Length: 300
Ligand code: EPU
Image (cartoon, rainbow, N blue to C red):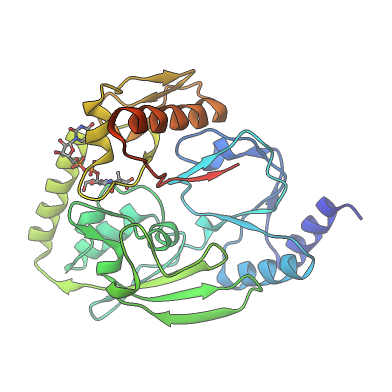
């Protein structure tokens, strides 16, 4: 049996739909990247656990994609099975001031539902693209908040498909960093929130949405900020100050709105994006001495 047939058989046994003919461009917000041999789309934690367990036992190394909002596909084909976790989208389920949500819940929905419920603490995340799993895994943040401020428990699958629960607190995380490794799959998270007046929380949401609209490229395909901020500075400010807004390679260009965003003008290729990332890093290093580090994850 070919390795591809084996992946399909394992997925079938676990009741997980498989798609072929899909690309990294299809599953990422930036919209670039090469073909995916097998795209697996589980809709429950149980079927995800089973498929991960059986794939691992057969020697495969599945790769996870959540919202694909902080991920850049390279040009090369992805032979490893790719698992899309968006179908695991139960919740948010409320228990007192806690909200429990599956990894595939879109952050925008989580934020809105919490505000409607009169629970505050996640308004900072208004407008962060992506899903619960990915944003907790990378400790996404904006406007003075980050996921670690509110996440208190995580359910994880390890590389062998074993499910565990882990209590977490702010000290387990740092800037864009969580205690979870590349092989940990976050399947559910519990957030501790603070009761508040829904109207006041909604007003705060609108304020954050307005700030984001004014400073980040709305409606364009991007992967959010490409680089981590260097200590004490903003990568976007630095790139802007060097006059690099609008710098382009093929269809990929530095946003005219925010220097730390690369936007896909419609026909960008994966190679365009990778080349532009390297060009920005080189120019910034040469002109300011700062070595920028990618915030986005690049699958080569
Ligand atoms: N600035 C410029 N030019 C630019 C961009 C920014 O001069 O092109 C200036 C701004 O005017 C401001 C300062 O730089 O004075 C900081 O800018 P901003 O408030 O946009 O924040 P940032 O440091 O560039 C960070 C996060 C964003 C998050 C915002 C808002 C990182 C890498 N970026 O950006 O997160 O939304 O703060 O809080 O930490 C992301 O991680 O994907 C992301 C977009």
